[in-house]
Image (tube, rainbow, N blue to C red; front, side, top):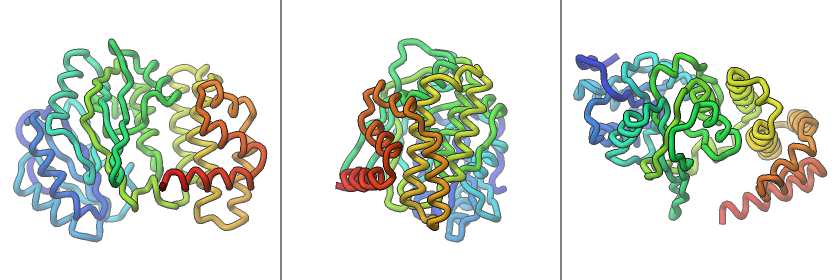
Length: 334
């Protein structure tokens, strides 16, 4: 560890996992130091980087008492880095950021103010995706008053509240109730589901405070093998649901979640990822066996026509589903 904790408890611990992040880390730390809420700590965990991340992190910690740098000698994934950072944190609240993203200088001041005024354990803000030459809004759910964690969990299953960590402020005490699911993709979703299930009150503010910058090499756009990660995420969300109410598992909301994040994501991964033919056929057969017509029709009930088409073709014909996936990918890149 480099740098010493300042006396007293910070209001927010900002969690910054970093892997080969030399291009972005220094700028991210500078922007966090410029937050209008001054009483924060910045915890950088270097996940076994092989570039200059270690030098930058250690230098920032030596220069600023509020910056703390930890290094993991071997790369273990973002979930493990976040778990280490949370274990070192002391703030009343946690905020998880990616160092190659952007955010408002007043983000923490506004999020904490909302938490204080409502007594919420989780505060959700507006955000946006930033693609090259394009911005796409990611609105927060409109909540006139705080809702329960169970109600927020239901919104998550229905897709009305996103599974991203970075547009949410969490009370740190909630983190003691969760496991840091070691999934390569959708690990945010696994954490958010568990944190919402542990929360008493959830509030939202509509203002856009965070910009997620989509880059060509990001995990969500890469052709990595995701089957194991998707299974881990499904298990984490299912466990969170069971802690709230076992009846959730039989609900339409849970079925819609499985359709989107488990079955359709899994089929896309199997058909486009780097699997050999035997692995691909095995994964596709298993997922199609779980894809019932009831789940397909859940997309229709929600007027989710894109997923209805994807689910219907997947149920009827793998070649037809492949063609639709190619069409969707071509439209997305246009």
